[in-house]
Length: 382
Image (tube, rainbow, N blue to C red; front, side, top):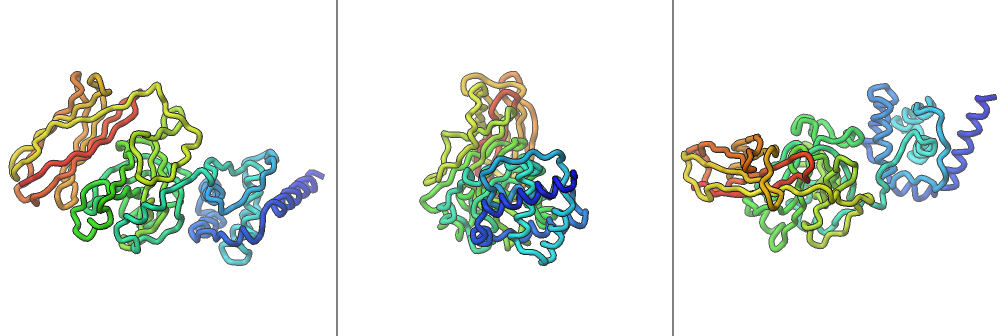
């Protein structure tokens, strides 16, 4: 009796799905090949249910799967029925169509086993950024606009004027990286914010000429949500990237998302911030730097990082300093904590073999109870 009831329930849900979806519309949007690979690995037991469902959530959040506006039927279990796994196997082998696979997966959404967190119509990007991407033909676009979340691990200015950010993805987005990311980026995805700095490459100058894109980049260690185009860099072994980035929001401890409203990309299509409001109880950190603007090779560069809340010095703030030389390579990294004056001092000897030119200095400051800060500086080596 119970078995018949379950079968009736499944059939009922299937009918709802069929009534709520246009077969033509579903076929117009193809499912990315990496989702099919995930289905194969899952059906073979190589990845867990949770990893597979996170990949499927991506399809729902991107609007590739259309979910009927009907009330979900509560599920008595969070486990995935075996027939769904069989469907995944058949689909990965090409024995059933995308539409048939979608119908089976929508059962998981209808029953609450998969929960969608980011409605697709709230993910917006700035398409005009592509007018300023350096050598856009090297980027194979997988999704024109998507959203990812994770923790910033490293910030590196690039010779072409872009800023490269290593992002350690949250578990529900880990499927978006590939072997190239493992080999080159320690498994992190790359976020590329374009036209951040003057280009050191002559052929890249034209891409950003007369236009500057300023996306607020939070410091290393910040939990963020980023919006942009999901691409593969064909010049770097199909490295997975979000490039160009349209916006980066800070995910605050209370779960809200904070966007710096004082910094905006020119001509930006507004990005819906998931209903979040800035945490007005938190104050923003500010960074200033005292250093030698011009320095000779073979001499000592001394710096004092000053952290404040805009009015008073902030002691006990964690500071990281990342120095990149004129060739675009890391020259020095420093970490420390501000003293009672809100200062952190550092120094090092500029190598006598360094190439003359502009050195980039990226500084991050964080402290509990404050909105973190990131600021870039330059000095010239002669």
